[in-house]
Amino acid sequence: MKHKLVVAVTGASGSIYTKVLFDKLLLLEEQIDSVGVVMSNNAKDVWAYELGNNSYEQYPFKFYAKGDFFAPFASGSAKYNVMLVCPCSMGTLSRITHGISDDLITRAADVILKERRKLILMVRDTPYSLIHLNNMKMLTEAGGIICPASPSFYSRPQSFEELAATVVDRALDLAGFELPSFRWGQR
Image (tube, rainbow, N blue to C red):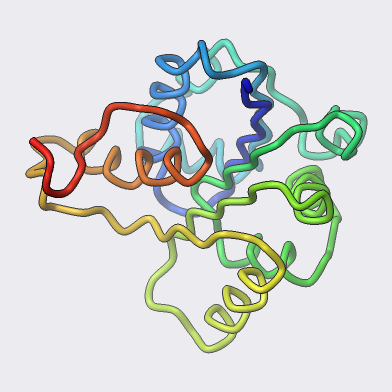
């Protein structure tokens, strides 16, 4: 089965994760039917600040405006089966957890949850408050997956991109993609 994937990008710091995710999705095109992307305005600003460019505009994915409730993944009937929120701000996590579907990001997440499909939130803030932890607990109980943007080091990454890939690869594994990645105990 090919994946129909939603990628939501919030204004949390960590644009490198989104860039690495986009690059990996290009390499996994044979496993993908479609990719829909929605970026908050803050996400665009953070990308420009952290990466020094607007290169997200060059990716061949279909981009949707934050207020576009006519996007296919705003309805369960479009059968998008995976949603990655990369990176995920705590504000977005809170709105998703509490069912506040006030934009396309939160509506798509609501749809993914109600249809019992895979919702993976790559949370980026630190430290966590009790509110954050309770929201993560509630979202997990509702069927979402919290995949903190906490890189691993045992693969000995040599660049920021390789470090970010340790998180992105894990999220793509959780989403059900087959990809070459460092596997503990395998060389």
